[in-house]
Amino acid sequence: MAVPHRDYVAERERRDPAFRAARERNRRAAELAEAIIGVRLAAGLTQAELAELLGTTQSAVARWENGTVLPSMATVLKLLDVLDVGFQATRRTVAFVPPQEIEARAPQVCPLPR
Image (cartoon, rainbow, N blue to C red; front, side, top):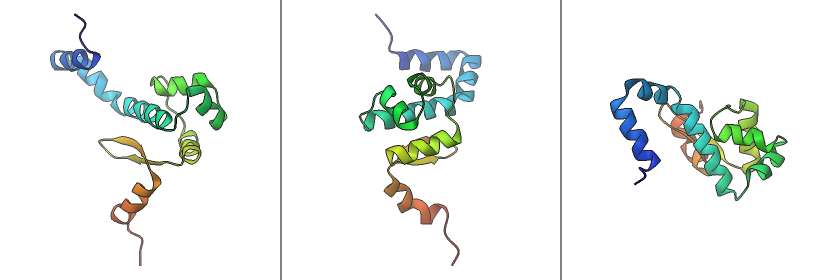
């Protein structure tokens, strides 16, 4: 019987310190890749359609989504604009969020001087 990938990874992390350390080093890139996949799917776009909107290739989008390559900051900013989403990164998470959610939190995160 096949073991679900998530269970396999959890078990391997538990018993293999080198594997766990490698996963931790790459965690942020994996989170960004998952966030890109999620926002693309939420927009109902294929990799090729997103690539066209961003002026890049489908293979570039595939590399971002599989974590092989990180998109540049300019590309992330273009992605935010094209899909009308915000971007939130903390020490623990990376996510694309609706702009209203970021605007609602902005006063708490970075209060403007009065």
